[in-house]
Image 1 (cartoon, rainbow, N blue to C red):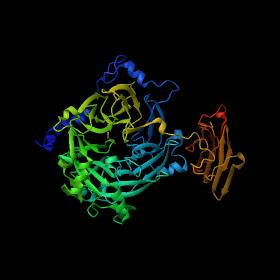
Image 2: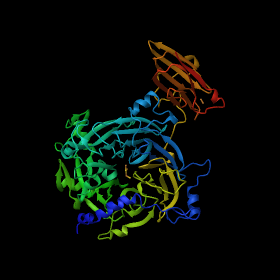
Image 3: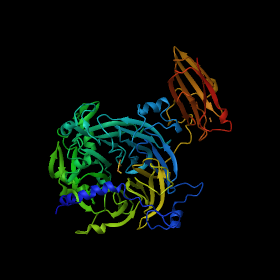
Image 4: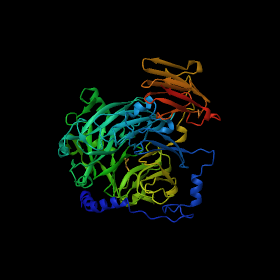
Length: 633
Ligand code: RUQ
Ligand code: CUA
């Protein structure tokens, strides 16, 4: 029996399992001592010691996990799992004044939310270099860059023609490019109207390569590739042996969206879907050679006209994750409706491309012959989603339906080896794991040590907070032969993916130094109370304000109703954590200025009366006295 026939037989029970997996594991663990969680068989004392970071001591790793539709990124320490910071990205965050001042408001582009899924570090030679963190918006065609010197979002780029950017952000080994792709195909070009009955022909997917400026980290669009209307899901960038390629899984190769047809059923009819493989250097060159057509401001390459840029690789139906091993040789695709994970050999894939060993061609994209490129099918368990790695040749695959992590050996394998012997360990998690992350697990040299399971459902393992409960993140020790559960942590909704970096790789600034050339000089900064000023031009009022413990200068601003008011505020403190806030009551103005920072806010004085303004950040013994008045005549 071929694998495809077999997978069809098990498909229906698996769809059911996938659905009930979401509700099936509600067993409540006994309260109290003596059990380390989900039956991992851990020793409580050993687990407690392994995660205890004494007061004043520092964690070994930073964990950056995505906040899903909260739009944010959350930062924790490992192994303590303590939450340290929140980095606002796609949504306003009053705590840091993000989205209130002119600059960050403009960056948000009128949106009040985003759906952050996959953070990725910048890399140098396949190693995390601690410079930038990128994150995608799965709802809009957006990608953001965070500077790890100050943990702030510095850029959000919106790319045309991409709908639901899920296969993002995955970075090439020297941070040349980062991926983006369409998860939910729409008519092309963006903004075109075509009914869903024309889905197969008028709707299109897009994969995009975004250039990263090696000095500034600035993101700019490199190319877009026009694709059949499949759902492009997860991605990864090649490294080592697979450097030069980008990979994305896709489902719905049926290219259908039938009204009331339930995509979950219609998109699972065919035995197989694909991994899309793109030669990003060839795509960049094709644009340079003038082979792209500008559509909505984007250089779009059509594989029906430009060859040797994109290929499909068959994979068990409805896949989710695709992950590149540390050496770059093994490409691992997981079909969520198949109990196996498929390992491909990049050497065989390159050979199939060179030999034109193709099964067929779809919309100009050749499909590599499955039997020629597959290395092995690993029976990891039910509902495999994502794979991570350690430093000893092991892979760890999350099993959503089974609520477990499977540990298995990467190739090479002996001739005729029973693939069941490749699975070396399994640990249950609580419950229904999505992504998982190992220490430096996307780099060329993962550390081993720790794995964090990002579980979709945590039910009953914490104090009850009503019907909507937090997701859980479980810390697992992977340093030995057997995985050991160490700790249950709970997170803001809702982490999709996370990345873990050695703490000493990140060097943060303590303050924005007055003369630091790293930070662009703000022309509106003032450093002495004497420079404080209010100027009027017609109905425009501009204010240069200074703030320091414990006053504002000026502390009275008089305007007329209907004036446009622009306030530049500089916090002249040069001491770490001496932030000042600037809030105008009843005007929805809330700015937070870090030491040495200047921020600008512009608004209309449309309500007459007298409004107090004050410092929102507790800054000194006389913080309460830090206030002034905004008078609107
Ligand atoms: S997804 S649970 Cu948005 Cu990365 Cu796989
Ligand atoms: Cu400044 Cu409180």
